[in-house]
Amino acid sequence: MLKTESQELVEEPHKIAELFADQFVNSYVREPDAPIPSINMPMVINSIDDVKFTAKIVLKTLLTSILLKRCSSLLAEHISSIMNKSMEDGRLSAGWKKATVVPIYKNGDKMRPSNYRPISLTSILCKAMEKIITERLREFLLQEQLILDEQHGFVPKRSIITNMLQCVNEWVSNHDNGLPTDVIYLDY
Image (tube, rainbow, N blue to C red):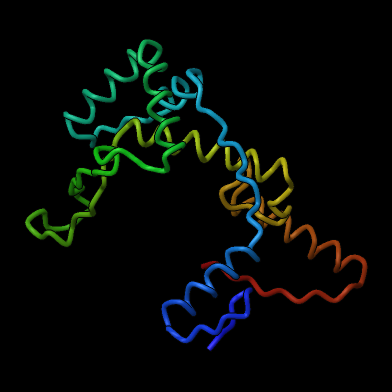
């Protein structure tokens, strides 16, 4: 049993739930939504131009990719409008979500399905949009200093090699200065 603001007793479960819902909604302070940066024509052209082709790509995808690359400057305005609308609505075109799975031969007996690995061929437009979003997100994280200096994965110009070099340098420096060093290295 609960009381309303007007001191009225409430016993019905659904009304009690409504009272809690009203209270919790009022006590929650929502941060203002950050504006979604728009996707412009040069971003679309660059991201489409950056899509890599491989000899293993299926003909349908290859033709679509070549057409989009050759016409990217003509189509960029319309594509950027579609991408911006998708970002605003928080929805993605069903066609952009579809993938064509192609078996790629690894090694061994070609008659055995276990000797193939699946490759998912997805929409070039979806790949282009993913690239734009990834770059924007990375820029934001770096600008706001939300990525630690120790982070090497998924950071431009960094890799497991730069990570190991930084660690070994620190270990050697600690050793030279007579500092104890414990190392636990995890990779998952």
